[in-house]
Image (cartoon, rainbow over all chains, first blue to last red; front, side, top):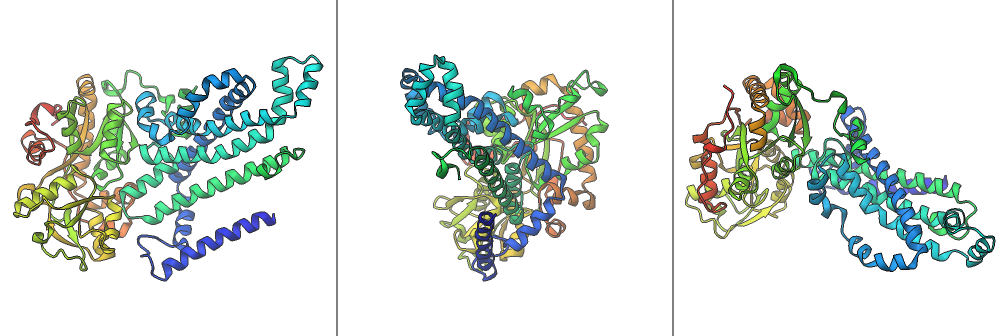
Amino acid sequence: MPRLLRALAGLAGFFLVWEVIVQAGLVRKEFLPPPSVVLVTIFEQFGETQFIRDLVATFLAWAIALLIAVAIAVPAGLLLGSIPGLRTATAVVIEFLRPIPAVALIPLVLLLIGGGPEAKITLAVYASLWPIMFNTIYALGEIDPVLLETAKACGTGKFRTLTSVALPHTAPFVFTGVRLSANIALIAVVSTEFLAGAKLGIGNFIMQASTGSTRFDLVLAGTVVVGALGFLINGGLEMIGRRAFRWSTVDREAVS
Amino acid sequence: MLATLGACGALGGEDTSKASGGGEGGLEKPKIKVALLPVVDLAPLRLAQEGGYFKAEGLEVEAVDAPSGQQAMTKMIGGEVDIAFSTYMPFFVAKSKGAADIRLVADSVSASPKSNAVVTVPTSPVKTINDLAGKKIAITDKNTASHLLTVSVMKDHGVDTSKVQWVPMQLPNIAAALSSGQVDAGYLPEPFLTQASKVVGATPVVDISTGATQDFPLAGFGALGSFVDKNPKTLAAFQRALAKAVRDSADRSKIEPMIVKYAKVDAETASLLTLPTFGSTLDARRLQRVPDLLLQTGVITAKLDAAPMLAPQAG
């Protein structure tokens, strides 16, 4: 808990600096409303069903995207990590695809699968695949060879070795990948909503508030809520990671 | 799998529980999707939605938000929506380039006096329209209504537009840019006009609704030719509901709440701002002014006839 308090103290400090800058008149209140205004706006928005629906839509899209990303990236990482030939064969394609920012694919995705929730989920899956996959691949390389030799000596099959020896040992690494991807997926979901427009979503809320009028308090309210969502997601995953991988000493720093 | 996930209502996907069947009132497509922007111009459409005007015609209109008219049109060409709201310029440019068979289905707004203006602030070197030559002028983007109307008004007054530095900027940011001296003048429609005057003391240099651009047709609804041909009754229902909402929009007390709710304008500004002229029925001769201006400013290179682009108008 003291960790959480320290983290929140940092946030409070950030809000304080922001408040002081605005109150001192360095920036006009109308263009950059201070946190005292924005927090009230956020509070008000939580009473609006539309805002709640936006928040739920973003959260659901994020959760679905992350689950799909895990379902694709972990098996892919295990395969690529255990079959060197396959890894060599796909390396160029992966290195070609990986640096493409998800938002740059928005026009293509809109054209191919339309602009519904599928678009933001697809883009978020795309963006969040890589950290999970690479962490899985690298983790496989880090396994104590003695373990693999033992499994081999006991006559364990290749698939069995992968799922019951390799996977548990790579789990903390994989989970770190998931945690990194969680934020990337959130960024991809919100950016797609913001840039392409959607029926629902926090990104859509921010887009509407930022193009429709000069209610900058609404824009910032949406922005702060996205930040808070990211903070909660990361905090939640960290907690899960600490509980689930208490036994792991290899990856203590990465997980905690 | 994604398609089924997308169908989930909470995600903001399609509501599959009300599958479109034969339709009430014999409409070919009783449920249509329309790409909309958070702008004052759409207040009548929002009124038609909230007041059940579309429903009375047996039509369900689902709103899909877009960040700009250009994007709304892209959504329409991509098949995500049936009808798109935009300023007229992108529609005509797309048609001229052969990018899509655009038909215009309903009018939305025209410039009314004091609803669109090129503004300046007291600290700016720009005092009169003649000072605009060679200055930095904020517009939403090149070749948009804000750019071309400013050019047209400047030419009307014999002001040289060749050395102007056009600064593309989002409308909500223009007041701040004016007050910090980043730009010398800017094109603002309502509600930004009222807000900028309140916040940074912006004053009009020239009203857009004067001279060649008086009552200029600003924005409307477009659809693809294939949709227009296949759904005449649906379109007529859409036009009738919109026309009724436009008639009712004369009552400001009905329109203001829509502006506050959908254009995200604060209630005080909503009560002060000058409304554009709302319309719904298109007139080819009047609309011809838009492609003519595009031709005159060199955005399109061949004369474009507006009349064949008009979908049949419900009386």
